[in-house]
Length: 145
Image (cartoon, rainbow, N blue to C red):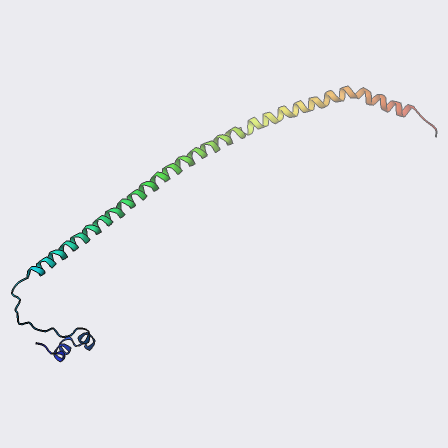
């Protein structure tokens, strides 16, 4: 039987010796494992197996989640690319319809200017005689005041 002093010398830690009193000896020698130890060891083995199985399940779940996230990210990037391409096509089409080029713009403006000048000339022809008569009337009519 080990005394308390021997345990303290052996452990070299007085706190541990106070926390763990010296065991008492029953006089029996352990020559093998008892049935309770075997059952305890089997239980520990089952717990270790269950823990490793739980870790495997968690790891598989995390991997599946990461795969789903990667798949969703790739699908979103494809949809974004398709949307960008569609919008870019619409934008280019509106630009090409809105500004048809320098040559066609010049032709359109030249035509509009020609029509406008022709309208001014016809207006002058119609009103030219009226203005000449009006000016002649003012010059030839003298009033004394």
